[in-house]
Image (tube, rainbow, N blue to C red; front, side, top):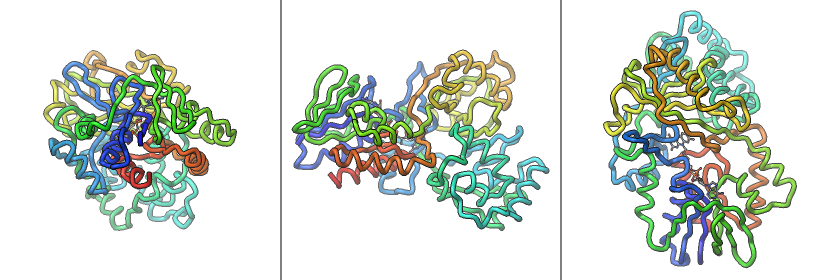
Amino acid sequence: MKVIILGGGLAAISTAYFLQDRQDIDEIIILEKEETTGGLCRSFHVGKYVYDIGPHILFSKDKEILQLMLDVLENNVNNCRRSNQIIYKGKYVQYPFENDLSKLPKEDLEYCINTFEKNPYENYAAANMLQFFLKTFGEGVTNTYLRPYNEKIWKYDPVFMDTQMVERIPKPTNEEFMRSAHGETVEGYLHQLYFSFPKVGGIEAVVRGFEKKLNEKCKIYTNQTVEKVIQNNGFHILTDKREFRGDICISTIPVQELVQAYDVNKQSIKEAVSDLKYNSIMIAFIKTKEDLCGKHFAFMIPDQNVIFHRISKMDFLGEEYTHDGATYMVEITYRPGDRYDEMSDSTIFEKIAEGLKAINFAAKSEDISLINLTRHQYAYVIYDLNHKSNMDKIREYFAEEGIWLNGRFGNFEYWNMDKVIRESLKLVERI
Ligand SMILES: Cc1cc2nc3c(=O)[nH]c(=O)nc-3n(C[C@H](O)[C@H](O)[C@H](O)COP(=O)(O)OP(=O)(O)OC[C@H]3O[C@@H](n4cnc5c(N)ncnc54)[C@H](O)[C@@H]3O)c2cc1C
């Protein structure tokens, strides 16, 4: 049997990796539209700089998959302890916000304590993300940090997002909250406190590690944009360059692209797909003359006047990523067609420079240089209130058509690398 995998990101490569040992599979073809495989796990190599599409770190509660990632990297990793900060009114509050409240200005701290202690929302069932925040953390923490930061990253009102993303966030106990309010920094989200990162090559090294382990059954074709998927005695796939044939079709390309290529004629499915919400992302790689922010990695910026929501300092990841002055990855999310999408690269850079000065990462514009700016259409799945019902219909449809969906945008789920790999393994067991 011959398998065709649409797309060449981590979902595709890891699916091929798990599939290759099956006796009933003779050939696995991977079709990727870009020049290189890796998708969101690609790394950019610009002169001496190497950086990713946003800070990608290796961590997981799924120990088996985490170990697999470390194995394909032949343990060639740096091990890091998280040091992430939220910049709130010029002060550094250690992430997660609710665990380092004493850093807040006095009146904001009192607002957070009072509304946590006497929380009128505590006993409601949360029907959306904002209600979950109010119920779990109270109005103070919600309004000072959670709401503005989430609006900024999602570019979507949390009132219209469901609770899938947040329902596992633990509610701090009164005691934990008070310890944090009275000056003790309590470590939170312990499963991501320690993480690994490839010593060289950026996060793409994980994809290259899997690729090195693919056998001769697997054939990767890059620069092949899938344009048509036709089912007729097996699958015929037409790319912009040539035709491929296979018995099994696995799609890891965004489901929006698959629907176009498959010529779906069921109106309800077309509508469900066009109702799916996602974010795009711009990644700017920036250098400043001096390092003014110390030994931290990622900084979250809830301030709506600063264009970026997160900035990450590269030297935290290891020697290979350390250069004179400081280098940063800056992230700006946008929704297709919104005001950020329409801004030119030079306007974006001007706004980034304003932001860097506002958070005191640079004293003057002349100290800041832009090394590179890229835009990526599919970055974050948004769990809006219709996500689940839309995806249930779409999955059922493609299951009936015999097309297997996999991956972050193929399956349209907010999946990190560990989950993508786990799902590839599960898929191979089901096929
Ligand atoms: C900003 C950001 C930070 C992240 N941080 C982390 C992190 O710290 N840790 C972590 O574990 N995960 C992180 N992730 C998630 C991780 O990047 C994804 O889980 C993973 O890369 C998804 O892989 P995928 O193969 O499913 O999708 P993708 O990487 O999107 O792959 C899809 C592939 O399909 C190709 N394609 C699309 N259309 C076509 C077509 N018509 N024809 C042919 N090919 C096509 C694309 O070019 C792409 O290569 C982060 C993601 C983002 C956006």
